[in-house]
Image (tube, rainbow, N blue to C red; front, side):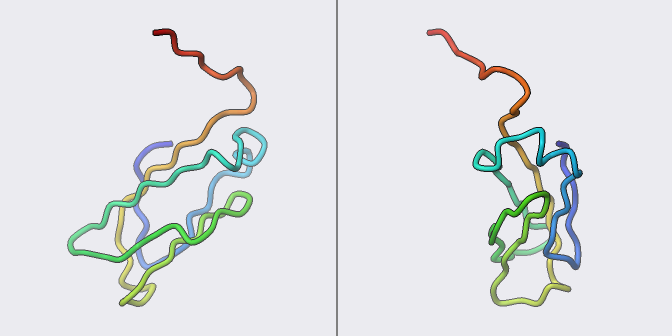
Length: 82
């Protein structure tokens, strides 16, 4: 997935096909605050919805980029040789 922006919202909606395409326990989310320091963290991942937690601010104050990666189910794992 490419860089996306989350603004005035604390929920990232993934496409419906993600639940069938990736292993849930491999989803990782990178959050990068825009404009100022924000205490953001991933609160939970359920199905195709990622909830972002925040402290010391209101939802309307969230402004960040996010990047999501996960391991696919439909292909074999990549084996790296040394």
